[in-house]
Image (cartoon, rainbow, N blue to C red; front, side, top):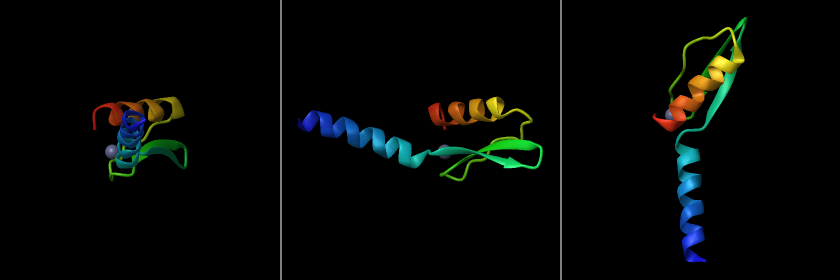
Length: 59
Ligand SMILES: [Zn+2]
């Protein structure tokens, strides 16, 4: 029981420190993170999401 709580706490802290969203700006979309990181402007949302995923894996 205690082990499961520890794992959940680790996941929560990881998500809280790097929570990414994609933000549309005109015709472009860029990824942004709660840590202040911002990805390059992309024309395709899928590219912005890839940027965000890569940042979350290796900030
Ligand atoms: Zn981040």
